[in-house]
Amino acid sequence: MLNRLTVSALLKIVILATSFSVVVGFSLNAWDSWGRLQAASRIAVIGDASANIFKAMHNLRTDRSTTTRLLNSDAPMDADIEKYLRNIRDTEMPAMGKALGLLGGVQFAQGQTLVPEFDKLYKTMGTLQREFWEAVAQPKASRRPTLVKDYTDAANGMLEVLEKLSGALAAAVNHQDATIDQLLAIKQIAWLLRNTAGEASLIVSTGLSAGKVSPETQSQQLGNQVTAFLGKIRAA
Image (tube, rainbow, N blue to C red; front, side, top):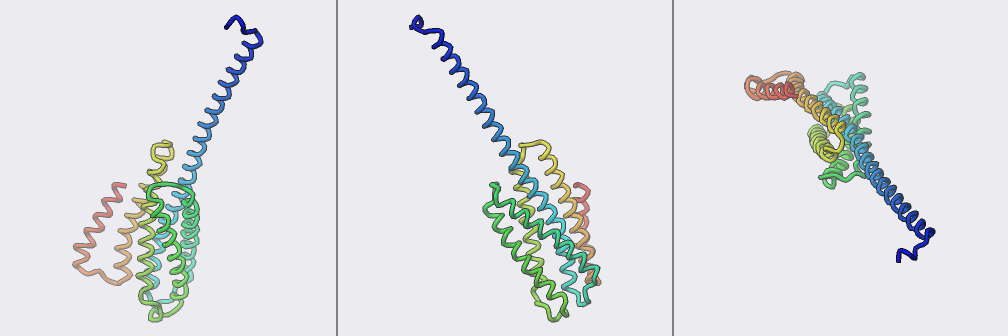
């Protein structure tokens, strides 16, 4: 049978086999490149979402404590404080909105439960902030009595959801890129330091705004909590 093969036929077979091998090789390389591009794009989106979440959490802690003090006070709001609070909210709310938009196109663990909860709390906080600006211009007696509690609960709920989202997003890209892993680890350590330092400061500032701290609280609860937070700060 081999004797019947002409040189022309043999060359055609060789050319076809070579062409097939080249096409297969290029296809495999293109598929691998496409997979790497998809993975890199996903990491970029998650990194952007995580950065916006961190920005929101950082500002939300200050927003929560400042809002609580203002609503509990009967004194008129200072213009500088108003500007300060508006700047905080003008940073935290867009950051939350950007994170929410990015997370809608990303699949990750707990995403089906955390993202809808995030969206719900985002809308709730927007409504409460609008009510806050109307209420703070009125005397304390005219404000809705549960507004302080509602805002604090919403802020606490949002911080809890954002912390869970931050951890879930870090886990979603874990071990895919060493640099990204290190950057996300630094961000989590930074938040631990920011959060624990803020909690310690909040205990002291709450006592100062109230005008007194009972001896029992100062010697037991306050002392134990501050000591615990200082230990976490040093660990971070």
